[in-house]
Image (cartoon, rainbow, N blue to C red; front, side, top):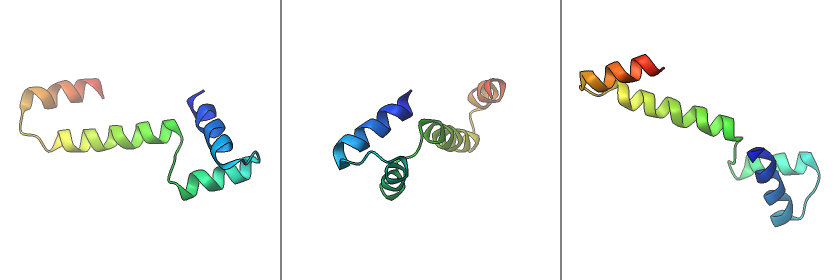
Length: 65
């Protein structure tokens, strides 16, 4: 659903309604799908958390992932 909203906004801003053009604009602006953004941010967070020395936080994060 959120990806549809992003596509509609790009269509209105750039006045383009072809899906290939919308995908090209998203690529040029580095706008990714919501799922891709979520996965990238989650991996970055887990990577930074793995560098911590706090054993309690590391234990909690290992149980959640």
